[in-house]
Image (tube, rainbow, N blue to C red; front, side, top):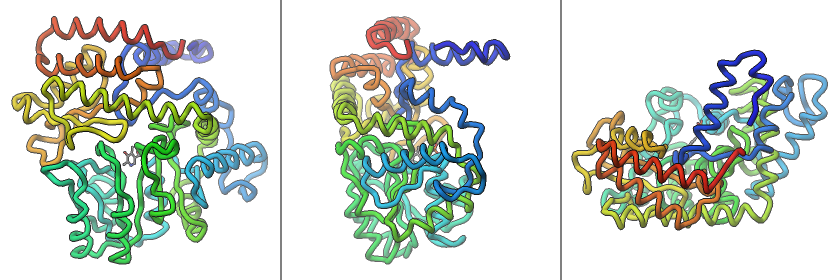
Length: 415
Ligand SMILES: *Cc1c(COP(=O)(O)O)cnc(C)c1O
């Protein structure tokens, strides 16, 4: 990838951009929220639409000159409807957090109650963490996963809902490896007359491909990110029934955003077109198979997974049983040194600090995009386990790093 125009103006940034492409090419991207967007998506996101103000929605903009913005946003909406089957879709949220903000602003007043999964059990900041706007504006309580099984404790969810009387119940998570039972969450929400927001940020691609159950038609609102497993332009999306369409649209613009990022919406349209191709279903199925293979490889080498395995693109490894002296942050750093980029993560019942917690989280969405199969993911599991066993051993890191180089060469991206 050349950045010749940038280089002409700013060689420092051009170098850093090229270094970043090199970094993605030469390391294993295993941060579960990341992927490698196609060059078609990158081109759309880097287009002249970055110049255009298009406040409003297709056919009802506040400024002139929106004919192509209208065409592109309408395509993004139509394709999203085909992918997820929702009645109404807003593709303008700048991010997944903004998508959640759109739903909260549409349906809640400040001080209303949100019930969501605890952050250390796999929830997301925008589900009501005290440091996030949602935690500051609303009254928040949490349900948890069952500490024995690692699965969502739907009984705890029902009981907490009864006691707390929430206005909205949030399902959908950042570090939860198992399929979500949206029907059970819906029942719990309905039993206390609360709305149900299913935030499928991580699994948008898996849901679109039908390899994870869909909350569309069950939950009142579905939000997602568009750059994780779906691999489109960066940003967020809100889905709802027609009944809530006007409230959602008004809450996104002008409620919480100004002009839409039309270049990102173009990236969403292009990525959604790619996801409508039959190959995308195969891709999503392989993502899950690869995560299973990765998880099995880790377990075979003595590591423990939260819930014992995965139904999705991610595995969450709890180091407390197998490596009680080793923290997630130490492993993250050692793995990065060896070319494997994943993240430290809290685990249910966390006993260490969130800055150096007891777990690591790894996803297979990006590796699968560059062609990794189950055999390659088994090898990756073995490499991760070797570093976890000896995070301080520079020789091990060196050997792992050579194996990573060979894997990257066999699975090229952005040539
Ligand atoms: C990633 C994620 C989001 C969106 O995050 P942004 O960084 O704001 O795009 C929202 N909810 C969940 C559960 C997530 O994992």
